[in-house]
Length: 335
Image (tube, rainbow, N blue to C red):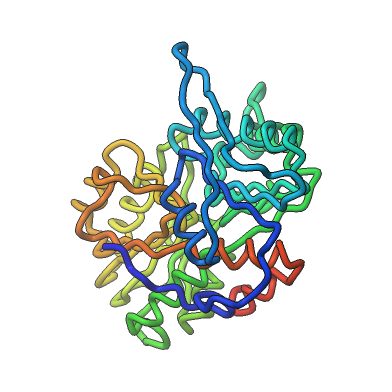
């Protein structure tokens, strides 16, 4: 189910501002989101065509002049990740050579973000590599939503605006009546996600619990312990993304075994790899709430799913960047 909720401080109410000199483009990875952002801003989505040569190489054509313009490119580097990333780099090169005044990359989802540090010898740090590629290709600024690791901002040698989807998720649950309820607890699916869970808990005036886990290998998880009282509670698990769904499903099962009466989950990025959608539908999780930072085809839709719009958040950030206004004030209720 697609939900129209977009309430936030300064979000959802179009403001009459001079957006002349701005051009908005969207790559192939999420053109629908690009159009929604353009609609929010009240401007046209500028023409750009990305096709393939016979050997599979990307062929790009920018259909309007961008000389001297403040150009924003919307391109989440989601699946197919390598194609989306390469297309983004080619777009940046094209606009740089077309004499755009400033190039801002709007990446609602940052691919390769999970490889943000070396855990074993001879491993790459691909989150840093992607940042270097984007900077070298010509970007002047980057906008991301809920990076997997906060330190990725420091991988760039250019300004990064880090937006948070948590307030939108929080206001959804407030609207559903979960605020200030004695039987609600917010759960972090791992220790690293505690700050995110704490911020949601503060919005809902609820306590938090933490699932301590370890990963013996990628996409595999072992639950070690649950810290906090979940017996007789309705649990809301929050994470930055859901990929295979393994962590969420296993965590929900353990919460139910500890006496929870219901487990809901929410995230910003619905990666939903493989058969994750079906696994979530068949699991003990009663509801999955996410945002449309990644396109959700019909194969990733399921009855328990609620999708919240990200276009008002992205559109407002773009408007404020163009007009040199504050971004941080969008998140006064999210600490």
